[in-house]
Amino acid sequence: MSHLPKSSETPSTPSTKQPRLLRRPDRFPTPTPGPTPTAHSPTLREDDAAAMSPSVARRGARPPFRPVGTPIRAPSGRQTVQSRAGSVGGAGKASSGRLATPPPHGIAALEQAARQRLLHLAQTVFINREFALLWWGQTISSVGDYAWDTALVLWIANTLALNQSWAPAAIAGVILAAALPQIIVGPLAGVFVDRWDKRRTMVIATALQALLAILLIPPVVGVPLPLVGSAHLPTFWALGVIYADVALITICAQFSLPAQLALIKDIAPDDKEDQAQEMTQAIQGLAVVIGPPVAAALVFGASIGWAMLLNALSFVVAFAALIAIHAPRATRSLKPGESGHFTREFLDGVGYVLGHTVLRTILVAEVLTWLGFGALQTLGYFFITENLHASPSMYGYFGADFGVGAILGGLLVTFVGQRVGLERMLWIALVTSGIFVIVMSHLTSFPLALVAAFCFGVTATTIIVTAGPLAIDATERQFVGRVMAVINPVGRLAAFISVVLAGALVSTVLAGFHASILGIHFGAVDTIFTGTGLLAVAGGIYARMTLGDTSPTQDVRSKRR
Image (cartoon, rainbow, N blue to C red; front, side, top):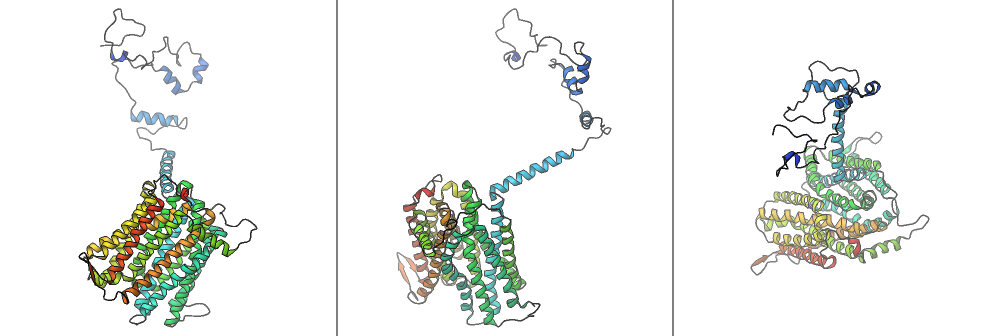
């Protein structure tokens, strides 16, 4: 076919097969007959032609269709650049033969698009500005806390009480100084947290922690002061100052931690609240892995003073982040002008937890988890040396292995929790953690025990990270402080009881115990481990029966009573 028939022509004989371009007459609109007016058309007035822009004139002069067979012509790159350069700025001229550089506003647009993508990514991960400030501040503070706790133990064991028979008691004093305020002050602090503004409570508590951490440096390290000078305290006085400082910092934390969980409910949107709580719980896994190695490097590579300075600076960073947060007005347990009654408010919080199906189940899960933690912390050294017949130096690998599993457990809940369902993950993690502990207790190979410890780290952290968002989501705003002040201290009390009970049983009742059931050998350490594993499995079954296999779309608040 050499050419297309004109639209005005009609074939004399109908064809059974039309040309391809004529099968869809609506594809190309038929041009209106008659000449198209242009700037040079005699039908166009001179003043209209003068008013038309050059581009409009060129469009008017261009034929509506390209004749068939005519090659497609495009202007060269030089012509395009020159025409653009001529159009931009009116009378401007392009340089001869050179391609113009991209205009500045094009580069700015690319930079703005990149910033918007980064902002979208940050908002997806950290939800909003306020939560990002809170998360980073508390993460740095938690790393400083774990580094400081580890540095204290290393410094006391290798410097202050080196080759002393009372060294284990000195280290136990640090653990008690941190544990007793959680058990005694924790339940009481929740009442006041619910009364007060949450952000202000965290600001004051963190400022006091920073001040206490800074004041500990001169008497322990011997930094010279302007009026007092430099003086080193005797060993037992130094221990007393350290215990007092650890206890006071922990007391401040009993006000800061419940206020932090309540503040998240104020600054995170309702649809992102579970994600915010999961990310907050995952902070502990990061701190467990990062803090201890940093502490060891500072204590053995520099001095204890640098570890103290890191601890103080971490509180300063957390304080600065809290100051920068703009939080809405917090919900309080007391109405304006209403006087509080401590006993009544405290009992209301306890009754709220015990009468709440979800919170009661989480309380049981926390107790069983911390019972296992306590036994492992107490008997882990003897399990490695006696059951696995490994070197004592391998104990550090066990802790690092558990910490890596803890990070994976936190990430697992963060990215999969909402799809699977937090209730389902809770009871599955309880059952599997118990199974891993039971299997690990009867292993005799160190590499296999490392695998089991890693799996236990994943599941145990999944329990803790899952329980936090479930508890916060199921709790009314005016009860958040008291609920956390009941669940957290009871869990720490369970760990404390487990430490004492496990050590007492191995030393007295189960000393020298050996038995064989169905060909499986039981000693003192693996018997206690097996018992804690069975408790965790029972807790998982209890959670499955009380919470059910809830789908991700169900709301735990519907199971309030």
